[in-house]
Image (tube, rainbow, N blue to C red; front, side, top):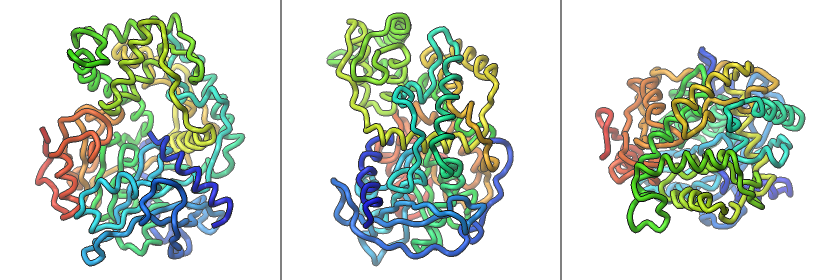
Length: 499
C-alpha cells in the first residue's frame, strides 16, 4: 500500500466517527456508457485502522471523475467487505449506503453490519464504501475558515431578528472558498455520480444485481440508483427516508426539519418532565416548550461565553442546533436537557469534542459539493427572507433555519444535469422503513418517496422516535419486517404499521 493510500485509510477512521431536484429526468446512463472500459476486478487486502472485524478486507476502485468523459481523469473509490458467512447459501452483495452527504460506510461491515441477523450475514457479502471526494477515496477540501465549520453555520440559522443578510455573506464566503480550493473534483460530486460509481462497483464485484440498505441521505442515493439502473437491483431497503422532490431535493430535506422538530418535541417534553429523571427540566410536559423558547430568546440577547466550543459562546442558535442533533435519538436527550439546565443557571457544560479540522473540512466539502451540484438554489435574497419569515411564524422552535440560505445560494456553477425524478418504473423490490417521529427525515417526506415509487415499494411505518429505524431507533416489529425481506425477499402485502 502506498503512503498516500495508507494516510487516507487512517483518516477514514476519524471520518466514520463524524458521519452523523429541478423538474425533469436525468437521462439514464447505462452501465457501459457510464464507465467506458469495464472495471478491473478488485484486489482485496487487509484494512488498516483499529476496532475492525479481522474478516473485513479493503480495496480501491478507479472510477471516471466525469461520466461525460468516461475515458478521462479517474478518481479512487475506497471499498470494503466482509464475505458472506455461509458461502453455500450466499445470495449476493448487500451494499451499505451511509447518510450525509459526507457519510462513509467503509467501516460499516465491521460495525452496523454485524447487527444484522445471522441469516442475512450468511446470505450476503457486506460491502461498504467511501463516496467520491471523501477520504480515503480521492478527497476534496474547501479550505474553509474555522468559524465556518461550526454546525450552526453549516445549517444556516438566521440572526435573532430573522435577518438572512449575514447568512448570505457567509454563503458567498464559503462558496468562494470551495471554488478556489476544491479542485475539479468538487464539480463532479453529485448523487447521480455516486449512483454511477455504485454501478461500477457492482460490476467490479462481479454481481449481476446488487441489494442495498440505505439510511437517511443513503435512501435518496438508493432510490436514484434504482431509477438509473433498475434492473441491476435485487432487494432494496430505504431506512429513514428522504423526500425525493425533484424541484428542491436538499432544500426540501432542510425544510423538513421544522416539521421533524414539531413531531419529536412532545416526546422529548414527556421525557424531560418525567419524575425521577435526573435530567428533568420541568414538572409538566406542557412547560418544556415555553421553557426552551424562553431560554433560546434569552441566549439570543445574552450569549454565554463557551471556551473551546465553535462558536465560543452558547447562543440561541447553538441551543436550537443542539436540539436538532439530540432529537436524532432519544438516547441523546440528556445532552439537550443538561444544556438547558446549564443555560438557566448562566453556565455551560464542558465544550463538546470536535472531530479533527481536516476531517471536518473534508466532510463539509463533500456535503457542500453534492448538495449544491444536485439542484440549483435560488440566488435572490427575497426568496429566503419570505421563507424564513413564514417559518419563524409557524414553527418558532426552529426559528426559520429550515428555509434559510446555505452556501448553495452562492454556488458559482450551475448543476450539470437535472435531478433524477423518482418514478414507479422498475421492479417491485423496495421496502421503506420509517419511524413515525424522525427529526431529520419526517414521516411526511417518507410518504412522498412512497408515493413516487408507487407499485415498486411497500412502506413499514414504525411507532418509534429517532432517526435510523432498522436495528437502531425503531422497534422489534419493524426490524423483523426488514430482516425477513433481506433474508427471504418476503415483504408485507401492503403498507404496514408497527405499533
